[in-house]
Image (cartoon, rainbow over all chains, first blue to last red; front, side):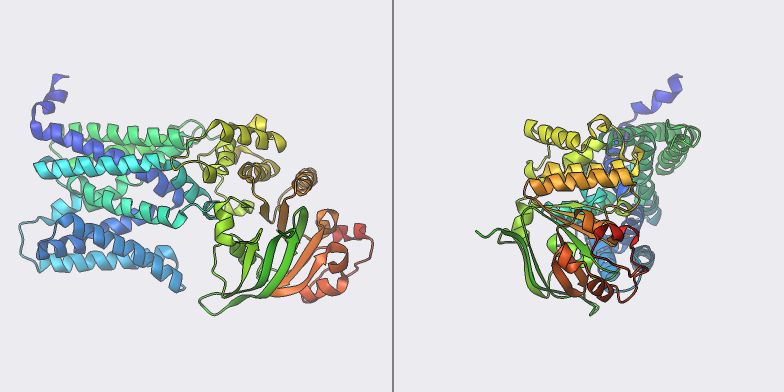
Length: 275
Length: 260
């Protein structure tokens, strides 16, 4: 058994545990609202769309974070605009918009000589995180997590019954944009840890797990966050033991949690369905 | 201040694609009124609701509540909305208590932490609609009538002076319909304005004081006995009524339904 905790002797593993937990908790909190609002695909779209932003920021010497955030917001707001001004449905617009932006990013990337590794952007490199990235992830992740939890009741109402939110003169549009902005920011913050492809899983699976287990928002948030952080620890341990890609191990554990919940969650699991 | 509380004057709404949804719609409702908003699908009922809730910007005219523009009345929590059952995702992780408490958000601070008064209002409202015993149920575990009553409780908890109900009687049994009507009468007694959007013509004369017949513009509006005539109805429904036998005796409306 001693072998399983050996990895904690290494500083990069301890850092990875901390950063991974923060990213997991932040994504899990957001994922509850994405799942409830039916925005699961939005995470997918934004995460791919940030690529051109990263490359352009690199070319112009801006912080990569800003480029990625701008690209993510550009993608989500143009999806909304096209949906409102054409007959095309939202999921279709998303499919075209984010793959288009992703392809643009790939073209830019292949034409740009750089030290960046594409696979680090795509699947993350949590074990090679720098000190400044470490601090940036913890502070931004903590901020997003705090805001999401503080405004959880308003966000729930906007997902549940936007009509009522509007009729009570709550800032429903602002909350929508806030959720989108936090989503974009969370994706950018998670890039280093799990990469733009795997972050999609972190933005969907925990919310689903929580929804399968719970009938109250607060409990759903707790279950989502706990399962996500636990997956991160187990995933990192496994990746250390079998020397496999860490981001992928984390997401794999999460997927297993989801599958187990789908089957065995009390009340809403397939084996115990009462309603 | 006049006794008129909801005043729609010359309201026109055009959508960006050029569709004229409402054309110079005008009517007034005073406090203590239950009014039915009747018309075919696509006649502008939902657009009118959206205008009263400030969702759509009118291209002409205005809506005023208590002499105040929509935006201001929404801020004062004067308008409450009871959605159609089909619009609600019943799988949401919220309890009967949670949904009713949502009606109090506008009165709370930005963290939405319920105060004693909020809890009291929620309890009062749930007791009024006979749903107190179900307060801890997840909303998907309720019957059709119970679901309706929860959203009515939310409107009561909010304390709205104008309550908008969208097709409240679809998928609801006779007993629940009677309970809802009783509640609506109580709200009228307390000086509220209830605006019910419906295409279920049969029950309208039973509980509505006034009727607005809508087909993009107002075909006729006023007291139910004056407006609810065979002639007006066939105008509103373009001769699509299945039963055109409309007598002066309202009990004959029992089997009257509109097609289309």
